[in-house]
Length: 132
Image (cartoon, rainbow, N blue to C red; front, side):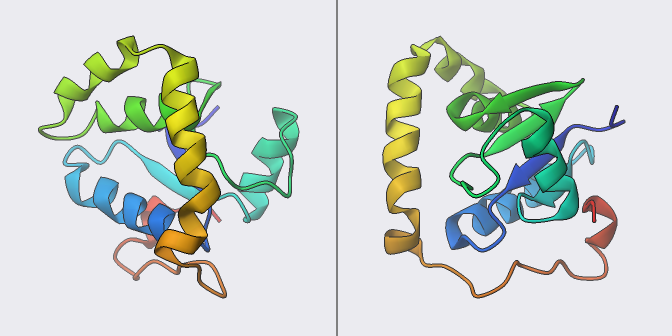
């Protein structure tokens, strides 16, 4: 069991990397750790929860041995950030609607925001927040 919640993200996606940097900037209490889905840790979580190891279109939050995916994972992270607690109200929107919007953005993220050739590498100061 991880001591802190872990955010798993597509390490080559510019939108996903921007989202991670958004979280890091607002994670005033240093709650989260991070791992790319392409990392050894990320792949082990995908296997453990029987998710496709080649499909990186979901933002995942692993918290207390529970894996939250797509809009639920994203909103649970957002609601724990400084000045973003209000976002928990968005969890009252039915999941099928939230996930439909999430999936539409996920399908188009490379076209709209671009893609890197390799996973983003954190600065030495941020490295402690990242697993493997």
